[in-house]
Length: 560
Image 1 (spheres, rainbow, N blue to C red):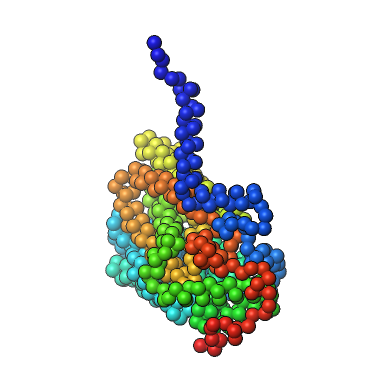
Image 2 (cartoon, rainbow, N blue to C red; image 1 turned 180 degrees about the vertical axis):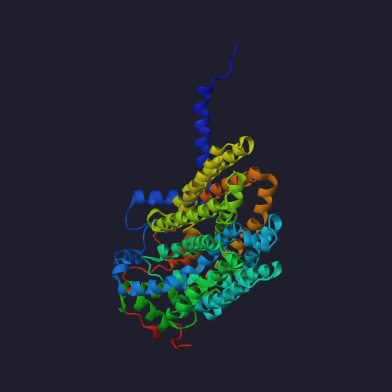
């Protein structure tokens, strides 16, 4: 008589199946293949290392030999101007998310707008994202035609106008229109600012400074949370008008500093202003001297832009005209959607509604928790920004997505438990898990969406690519902000299951398709996507050896 195989005897077979599946994925998915190639190259060693590995280039090596930014007078001045002029662009978005969250705890706001809930509340929040979506076709044209500084300036002026109208709103329609205007201006700033930051920053600091861009979301969020916490007791509509007016503060800061910065050297070279580009590189990357690093950077940028110009004018079709560009667009769109569809939108805009569902209904407590969550997030995001180049992009994405998925499963279970038993311990567990969730979100999706998107895009499509990132982000935000309150109101904790499924998909895509870019200069990252046809790396002892003569370049040097 035969007996069924025991459970123990099946284990080797199961393990073999898992191992075979993982090997199948590693052989066929691009990111694991890149990782294996890098591992083999490091094991083999030697002077010749494949371009798709993490071996630092000569520019990266020279950059790492440079002193720390705080020991460089030129870089201190650059970042002192760059931070208020461009890095704080994302503070406006963060301010808006926290302000709309906090205003739901303000009684005068509820009374003035007739207690908005569900679809009405969703429209009030989501309309700003719709404004950003509508301006994305125009924003990259301004950045490419007139320069990164003009993109920031136009966006800031529009947002200031929107904030003033928002403060002066006398009815629901006026409030909604003002928020559309705010969003319309935001795309100009968030398309141009990260490009300017990435293209002006010293190679040693580029990744960290660009990563800090997105962490400034929390800087604005903290400001809005505590401003609203302070004004919510004012016995008039100024309890919500003051926070609404102060939404223009980041734009005012940007306008005060942006014209003290030089234009992007890459943009200058693209406009045949080679001399101005070289002077900017010498001033901020070479302490006023034409160092080897400055020469290599200049020649590499010029070579890359010459190659791109030979391919013809860049159009929206160029974004998908090559295999490399299609891959880039896939990753950029993933960055936009993943940064908003990972469950963070629930916390950013509807934390008070989440706390309502688990029995934490005191308005003072909700406002206090909102403020504390934002301080917690900013500390986490700022810390992780300094580890991006040290750890690499791919490990951070994998830890982040798997961690968020695990925590969200626990969050869903605790919410279901509270719905069934009304146990206060389950409500406290949800609150604790929100703080734990933010740890995993901030590991990757605070510092990396902007930094990763801007570095994988070559100059010719960088402005349009960042506009695509803004479009995908705001499209995700619009759906989030409109659907989330409806889902929470109608199906409660079951709505969280949607995010569990989304996070599972994100984890798989992060494992299979997010390529590593660690140790590469901006122009050299193109090799990862386009192969040797995009290889603009200069050989040691090549063009970088002698002083740069802009008169011999293909470009004119007259100043426009």
